[in-house]
Length: 257
Image: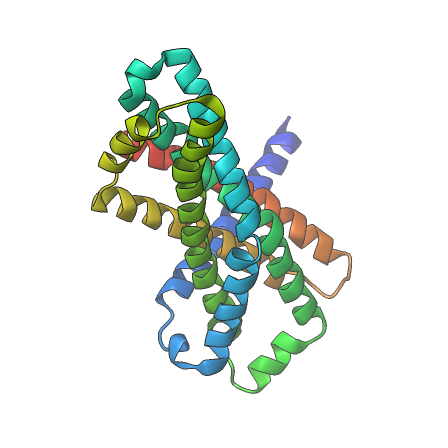
């Protein structure tokens, strides 16, 4: 029993330390001064945005329109056309609003998070990180900070596209295929849009993306010299990323509810 308690305590302590270190790296990246003035750092950020936000944009848009079409068609069939305002609010705030961030987070984590962890882990094992340090170049400023910011900006782009495709093209598809009155749902949908709504959801998306980037970079740079540690780092980045996404989403829900 004592050995089990000690093992659990040791495991919990290690995980807590790793969590603090990963969050510290994320916060340092968001407050890292001067890197945006360096052309090489900006190129790292642009490439990361290209890979994380631009390349999967078609997939996110297609799935957003599909989710919007299914959601509004099913809700209209259940609640009836007389409840168009309630249907739009329910779809936007719960089905599309919450699902957009979670879905885009999973896309960013499973695709770009894995790639970032693998790339940084390989760079460390090849000695490239050590070479940067010998040249007086900070890996935090050159490799981590641009990626963390790029992940945050990419999440804002992906979430915005997903929500737009779910609300407008999704509604248009429902109007064509399900016979819904487009203007009956479009007008209350426009009324839901406000500066605070856009700002709060953009901020939420940016934070989610930055945490995904920070966790991926942290585990990539935490590998040792053994090649087998790279798959382990990728597995840990995905595990920690999913856990933190769910925790942050629950916290956000309690704060705004």
